Image (cartoon, rainbow over all chains, first blue to last red; front, side, top):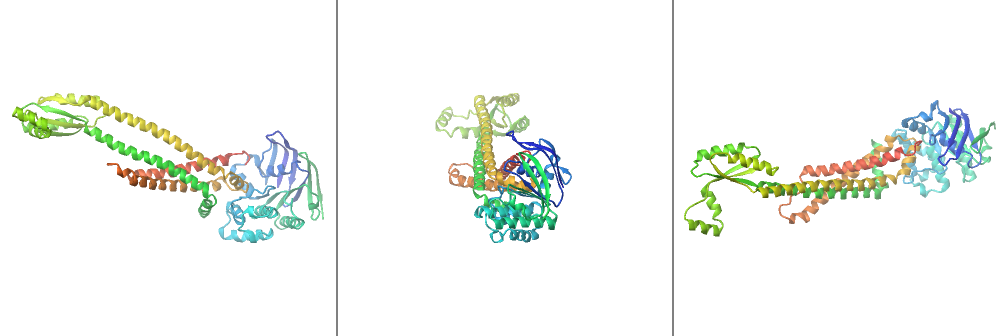
Length: 224
Length: 285
């Protein structure tokens, strides 16, 4: 469970990114953070992943307050979190396979299970035949696919997806949404996904948290 | 462990150029230090020879019998800082003296051996004052007629030795600081190039030690390679150039081991400092 209480975040350039944020996300919930660019969606994801710290307020992930985490706790938090970054954050000098292998090594998965797990996940994003490619050799959509695959490979408890379908064709977009929804239903994974577009929300039951200028302006559930 | 070995092996391929730069920087640094060590140990040998060449000569009064000579020799040996004593009879002195043809003619003119028996005394000299003190003690023995030593010569040798030692120390400090700074920055830069990778590693949940370990092993291997290469190059320089200078000796094995160990420490420390900077940057990360 993720609990955010009265959070206020201000960046070093004095921009107020998040203002008086209160949010509770249950385990296994699929939440869309919807809002225009600059509304604080990405900041909220980074806050949960402890990449930024609040000026005031508290953030709890599985009852642990992120502000009070030691470096080993932060590593543990990120091991159970899969983050799909807008700017990918790849290990550019490592192959597709090695990018994913690194994550599994970090969570200390047994050597004999790593290969099968990576192949299974690469199949989902149609990158199995490109597992030996370096990220710069992939198309933009494929790089995004790799970023998604990397976030899924260690079977995370939480997926934080920062506009994962932006710039993708409709087929790829639908495929990614199908994968993420399946994960929520089959593995009880929590997914928080940011988007500027309403059309990706149309096919599945979901909760929509709308943000504007750093504040949450609405919170609603839609059933399909 | 398997992960670390694989990472290090792959990183040497992935970051071939920066690894090569680090290894060559360590090689050049250790080569310079090795050359200096080579110079220093050979200089020390010259200094030892110089020190050994300084001696006190104690002339004996006439008619001192061989029993008394032995007693005197034993007494002189017991004096502080005396390293060795040898006896030179009037006959020995004559043979030595008449090696010079002009002096030989003068002796022939006199018609008899005017040279006295003497003791040649070598000391572990650390100061001219200690030498003077030893000379005074020797002069007090009743069968000793006169004690001579080159006070000025001793003073200049000691001054020379001290200057060389001080100069060497200053040079070592300057050289050390200079090379360590250069190598530190080189390795730091090589690690910095991988800063983005380190940040991504942290974001996917790698612990600090998980990230740090391959870097440290890489540093050890870079240092080891640099140390061995520098020792090899130093030997090549010695064989090609320095063997042409008479009396120059190569570094003992212990010194070679020190060069390799220093290379390892350099590589390890450089990588450790570089990685720590990245692991600590950005509070929230």
